[in-house]
Length: 376
Image (cartoon, rainbow, N blue to C red; front, top):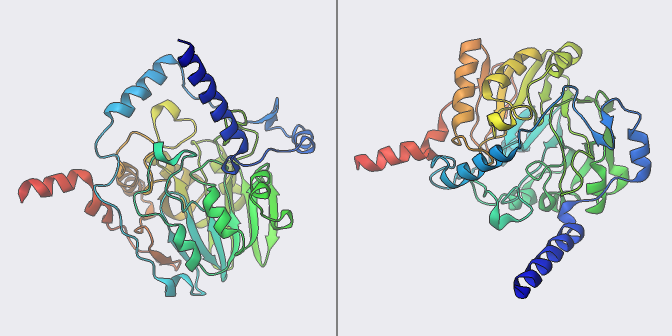
């Protein structure tokens, strides 16, 4: 019995030391920041809050159901094989407005010949302990950073591991001109060696004029935190990017709410919306949208073309890995919404007419692969 107690004590101390000392957990906001934040309507009792009340259904029954799903979840929650990624560097480095998707919520946008990276997560796993977390559907993309052109700006929507990746920032920090982040997130970047002068922190509805572009930080309905004790101490958001020829909105993570119509009224219409619509579950429906809600949010913000994001790279929920895009396309067709679904790594030029979806994911769909094998 004494040996078991010693092991538990040592394990507990090791975990505490790991969380407090490893840099990947990021930094902590200062007391002066906390004092400044307390005057905001969306900051209560030392934490940021959403415009609408949100509740994570995490009672005993929910925890038990999650444990059950984790052990007996659907077999098609990830592709059968690794998804190969082929990049067209000539298109990526072109001066034409374009979008390149790296899976999940990571994009490289070119707007008015400004290279803008959104939520750079190129690492192998969105977990602080990779050997027990979900693995990327493709090979590790960190080497891609070495080939990227100089990045004019990085926009981060919140500090979760699948959107703000320590290893990616370490490799990116020397080739990025400016970082735009929600309130509090600068503490992480500064701890990782990013110069404070190259970080712009934004509250909801803050607007910036930057190198000929208009950039605005807008609300989302989500939460934040990288450690055990710092939940909601930093803000989460979406971003509006207004160029000469393209008006772009990315939602960041979040549930459906009235903020979409507010954004549409203030900044719409948009030529392209990048709408979160993956990793959803009824148990956390307030902070992640179902694909049908994503389509409605696109209509609320008055978008022309829509792309569904937050899927295609990692398994973080219990639906099949292709469920988001399949449901999203069906919902878009029912609502008369124009939707695009480029392959991971594909570059799409942002012209007046964007390509219709091709179901490339079926090449890696577990269900289809099993059917193909059974006919051989």
